Structure formats: C-alpha cells, structure tokens
Image (cartoon, rainbow, N blue to C red; front, side, top):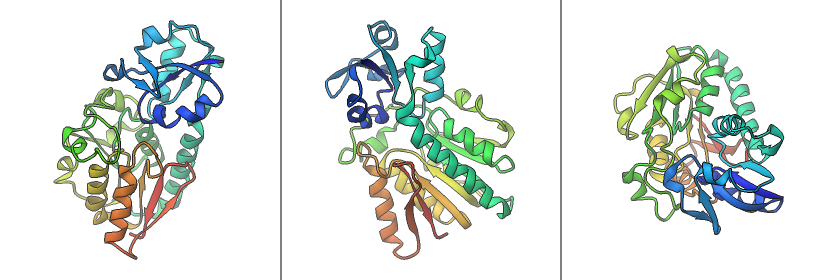
Length: 277
C-alpha cells in the first residue's frame, strides 16, 4: 500500500523505518514550508496540496505535536478517517497522557502555590493536557513561537540535523485556543532561558520538550532550584535517535549532581522523568 507521511520533522525522520516496513512511502508532506523541497531517506517532502493530490492509499501522521491539527486538516479536505493512520504516534502519546494524569493525582497534596510549566510548546497539545490535569495551578509556557533559535543551532551540529526556524509553524493564538483554563496560563515568548530570568515561585511539574542540547541543559539547571519537594521534571526525546541533545543534557546534569537526582523512563519510549527534588 502506498502511503504519504504527514509530518516531516523529527517524528517523521524517526518513524521512517517503522512506517516503511508496512507501507511504501511515496512522499512526505508538512505544513512548514521551509521543509518543502527536502527529503527524508530520499523520499521527497512536498507541500500538502501537491502531496495530497498524488495517488495514495493512506495518510500516515508522523507528527505527534501536530496530530490534532493534521487530522482535522485531512478530514476537512474530504479524506475519510479510515485512510488516516495515527497508530504510529498514538501509543507514546497515550503513555505520556496516562503518566501526566496519574502524576497530577499524586500531587494533589502539594501546596497550591506550586506552579507547573512547559518549555518547548509548539502547537500546545501537551500544554493543553497540563492545563487540564492541573486546573488550579498557574501554567507557565516558554517558546519562541518562531522555531529553533540560531543561538542553539550553533551548538547543535554534533547532536542533530536541526535547522533554525524548524517547528516555527505555530503561534501564541494557536496554543491559547486549546487551553481549557486560559486564565491560568502565562505565556513567555522569546529565547529561553532569557524569558525565565525573572520567573518566581516554585514548581511541582515541568516538561522540557525543546529537542536540543543547550535549552534542555539550561532548563534543567534553571528549574533545579525551583522544584518543590516531590517535584518532577519530564524530559522528552531522551531516547530519540534523531535528537541526541536532550540525552546529553540530562546525562551531564545528572553527572554534575551525582547521587542527588535520578532519571527513569515513563513508558512512552522517548521520555525520562527526573526525581529527587
């Protein structure tokens, strides 16, 4: 069966081998125009209009952060839901969702003065869950909303093939429209960790999903002193093959704080939680 993979970012590259075992991938597509004209393992990345005009059997969504928007986009184009395959990314998403839900229940007894945060928001799908599961806590969201910053990419070459501006196809409005409790959300737009320079308060849960070494390492160092007792920092992409920066950042952080903190996988195949605060 011929497939078009919708999502040509990190997830698309990571899932190429897995998807190609079941389908013949004839093209990738992405809503980020900076990716058009490129390729993944020799498979061309086309703009959606061109890709969806090809003769294909199924659309395989390979972007976890963009799942909801991509699926809605395909349905609006008249593509039947039974031709839209989401199974390659729903398992890790479901595992992360279950982890967050159960953690939020365990943290019910943490003083309500403790906040929650996410750095690396993209389109806000996971931020939406944090907002839902921690409805009475202030959620601080950090993102450039214009993609990877040159200052981080400069240090990234040994860890990934990330390029400046990647994951820039988002906006504050896109994210805020997904929030169930928008009045509890504080947006910090700009270069991290500069946007957190004057951040006050403590935190019981923080999600670091920035894909790159430098912001992940800086995030761990900054939030280290702000975590409440029993707090958890979740780091995405620790086990990712295409983004090696987060693992390097976590390992360095743990080495520098030998014996104080510990990291454990959460079952989604990508993330680790850091505990010991």
